[in-house]
Amino acid sequence: GVEMQLDNGGQELTVTLRPLPKFTQLLQNYPNPFNPETWIPYQLSESASVVVSIYDSQGILVRRLELGDQPAGHYQMRDRAAYWDGRNAEGETVASGLYLYQIEAGNYQQIRKMVSLK
Image (cartoon, rainbow, N blue to C red; front, top):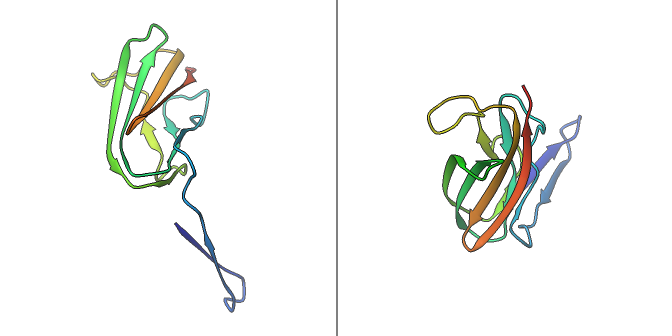
């Protein structure tokens, strides 16, 4: 991506090129612990079809977020990261406790932990 910044006088334009990530990675959700919603950041070294699955502490699937085909890049800011409203597939708010979230992007998989606190 390209980031541009104008200084106070508006005379100088700084352009920063952010290189694409060298590897695909699942990052820690924020806020963590969360209530009631959280963002799940990740980065892709190449374009991939992305699915984020959320499991309870027993390993039972709570919610599946189909993010579709995503180009390589950084998905860390709130407007780009995967968003979970803290609800299960039936629309009910999940209980407090430990949850696992997994990303599948192409043949890459990774799991991390997060905590819901009411």
